[in-house]
Image 1 (tube, rainbow, N blue to C red):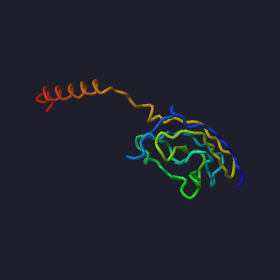
Image 2: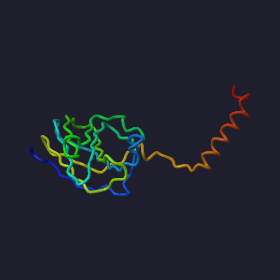
Image 3: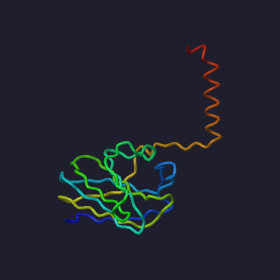
Image 4: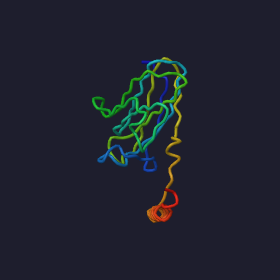
Amino acid sequence: MNIQLVYSSKLTVGSPTYDRGSELAKCHYETFAIHVSTKGVYVFWSESNINTIGYIYKNDFDSIKPSENLLLKHDGFCNDGQFKLMIDLEINTRYILVVTTNRPNTTGNFSIFISGPNNVTLNQWQSSISNMGITIDSNALLYICFFFVCFNNRYKKYIG
């Protein structure tokens, strides 16, 4: 297997988190844009002192809807807790690699190895969907809901 790229990083307490299910809340993750210059089958795998899970998405990754756009995942089962993904990639297509853990609040170093028919570029990536979030504290949300209900009831007779 010809290794085209090795990328090392670290999941920290400052890394973003998302909910992968009721018992898997607050799993730290990191996202990467994958760029290939040649169509073909590529293999992505991790080496780490923590158990890692890998996901590959097409076009975008939304941490609020993690099953949307998902192409492939591997949880490290049967591979000593390290993910291994084999996927046929096209040129001029955005692919997103998400590296996370199988337990909440887990941090540590990891390395990603990639092999395939030609060079691969891996860049840290942040979803435009995630950037559109608005943070509203509970008092403001309560006020907005109250205002909407009052407005709707008061002017219902004018708007039909």
